[in-house]
Length: 65
Image 1 (cartoon, rainbow, N blue to C red):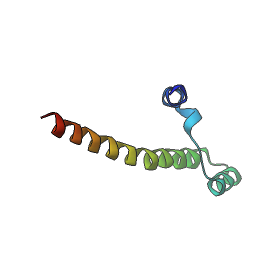
Image 2: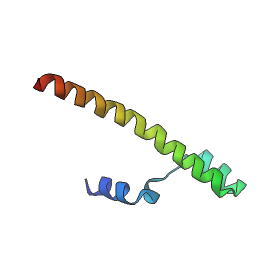
Image 3: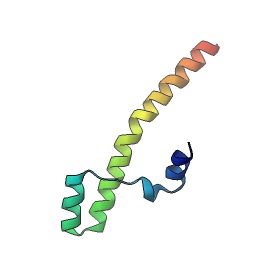
Image 4: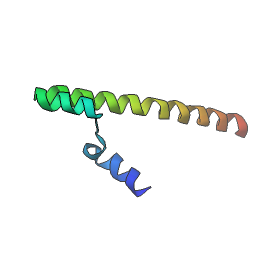
């Protein structure tokens, strides 16, 4: 739980890349491209969690009513 809070409060620690992406971006030297790749990874990771959270919220509302 603490680790999750740290990642939410300090997003620079949560940014990561696969080995191939990291190698290409380090050799290229473009900071804007690296930031774009990191943002894309975060978006791809967050969308399934948001969908599951929405589903559980919908089920919760249906069960409560």
